[in-house]
Amino acid sequence: MSVSAIIAAAGSGERFGAGFPKALIQLGDRTLLEHAVACLAPIADQIIISAPAGFEAQISELVGEGVDVVTGGATRSASVRNALAITTGDYVLVHDAARALATSDLAQRIVAALKNGESAVIPAIAVIDTVKVINADGYVASTPDRRSLVSVQTPQGFTTSALRQAHAAHADATDDAALIENGGGRVKVIEGEARALKITTQADLHTALAFLGFNSTYRTGVGIDAHAFGIGRALWLAGLHWPDEIGVDGHSDGDVAAHAMCDAILAATQLGDLGSNFGVDRPEYAGASGVQLLEETLLKITEAGYFISNVTVQVIGNRPKIGKRRAEAVSILSQALGGADVSLSATTTDGMGLTGEGKGIGAIASALVFKQ
Image 1 (cartoon, rainbow, N blue to C red):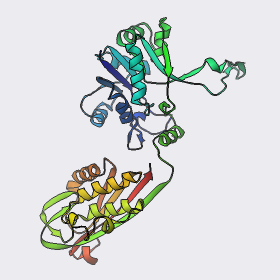
Image 2: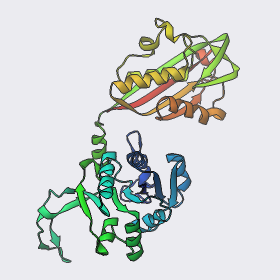
Image 3: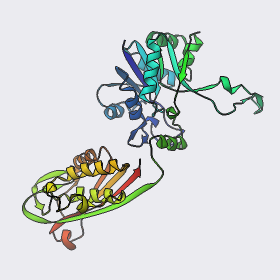
Image 4: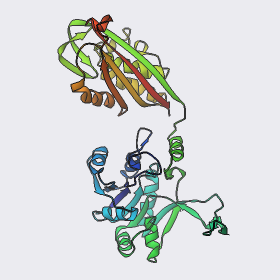
């Protein structure tokens, strides 16, 4: 019996104040949407995302091949119906991108209940606050017994036939289980999880970061590197080979941009510097590429519990001209750092010093990291 998963991701994010769809907000090392896909990927044979109109191509590129993307509707229910139209599985999980940290275990428990004969299964956690019902004038009308109240989460699971019938019979609801209820269907409740919180505000985002192990302490570091040109050596800069340029002297490949980035990251994490980790006393790094050193730097800081927020690097020299290959270089450097955000720029020193006189090339970098 196959399982499809629908991720409702068409929300505008207005309440969050991001200025772009909420599903594309960054949470740690990936977007809310990417977290949601990672939750469902081990469970679902098919994943369908209902995307905000105009963002379909961007979201397709973000999540990669193997995930279907449809245009969302004006309401959550309409978005789910658009995705439901191409659903192929016997069972379907409906998930909100805003509940990015729901686990694969939760999804698996929902599918297990469906395979045991339930037609609708939802996760929920107990309500711990006293809840009041108020009237139109703002006065308390009643106080329900909170022992019978739960707060509902996603993903929610259904037999595909039952969910299609419910959507055909009823227009809209705040969740899909309500559509089943409106038609007289039974909805099984299983235990949810605290980390499946709905991320709607900045405060929710900070709570979610805590579940990922992030603290509120950020660290910064600065790195500088410079090398003199050396006749007969190839020039490697920002992870790229520059075939028409003169290379630089150095123990490794002399990639000043990558080296400055390594130094900045190591400084921010207090794990030494380029020399202490990859210096001339380490013969195994003779001729090593800047990309290799970035990859190994990432391994070191990851083992120490750090994540990279972003790294910026500025190349200082008369040549080569970075502009035409900037995007290519940024891609290579980012990949070496596990997809971290990287910015690359270039400048000259107006004829002054080592770089200005054309004797060499340098770079300065800064890194922002946080503890996992």
